[in-house]
Length: 314
Image (tube, rainbow, N blue to C red):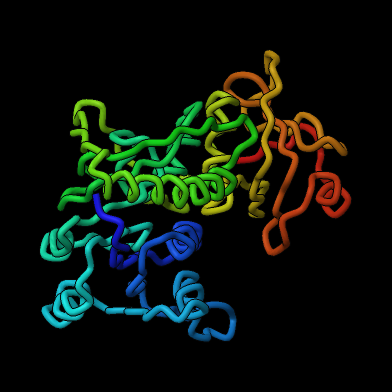
């Protein structure tokens, strides 16, 4: 065990990484640099916008590195010159080479948004919701050169509530990840956190999402559609067409009942939402985004659009 503060390099880019970086900045160790993706053009004006972690690091006077490639000798020499004891990764956005992973004496650890070995990959939070899991969590893991295949150091579990979306779970895990990481680092210092090999036979994948995934197949069970809509909220979102107009759907609710109508049929449209027949049971939609409009509650949408019961969404 050592009481000496560790020299830590933090690698993370999006909003998910910000709570973890905040916890590290408030902790006993020294953040010697933050590595994140280059600034990107965003919005209508296409102005360069810095990643959230860069903004936070700059506010705290932490040096920021934004290499276009992390697989160059120049970048490795720069990291080496910082003499890190440990590299911490939280949603950096690219696969790290072994030359970087094994450079610090304590290696590289990652905050992963699932209970490994389940949901290895780029979208673990979304797939846990889509697949109807009742719980998820974060795993602090020792990184190796595989896709989330390194040894488990510390998992932490939270329930997935019936109304949770990928967005709400994302926020919960982002906050949880930072707190669990700080605890894990302290135990690593004390040599009280033995690594646990992952059981590859229990592994599942969490590949990137696509916009096409959101096109609803109404012949499916209402519960399956309920999970899909929540798992794709806020992006890329679930949708269906009425004629040639697309409607995006949010805040679903399963209504039990034997549907005599053909799947996709609009059975009711009132202040409580749009009620659809599915392959099994009914699905109520409480929040809608018509094409070219903002997201709104069902009552506001019904006031602006004339829905007719019996119409079929495709």
